[in-house]
Length: 208
Image (tube, rainbow, N blue to C red; front, top):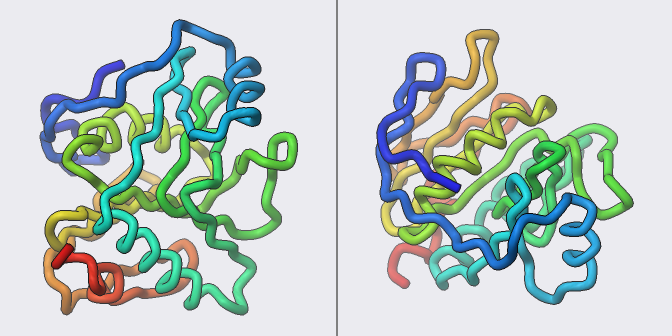
């Protein structure tokens, strides 16, 4: 499985070139049904792409704090709306051959689950980028996410500096809508009708 090594264009906007670091597969080729059977019996989490299983590494303290901040900031603003916020334990069916665990997932409307545990219709996905998995998240994983029809927005949040990128599905394709690098800026999530100060996403996370 390869990650992007050069800038790729999405509706005329560049996805920045990054280190091509990817998780290492832990097994030979298996069918999706076998992956799901094993995953439901496993204590550890694994992602599945095109017949290969990839172990999920634990997050750093700053990664975990940012993930928690996203859940609090986004989840609190979604109260009263027909939306739910899911943690990184929520598995998402991206395609028939791709299953992932986003850092934070927002689902709106009636949730659709495969066998009661795999979400099929997320509206917004957040990925907190770490140096070791940024290439994978921006590359193969991002490419798969863009194939998920119910998905409207994808947000990348850097863990080692202030940077928040929001990609949105438009009539022209996926487009970079926001590239924020200041704590005083605000992240808009148009698909769910809320705005979140960038400072809330990074609260107590940058000094770890």
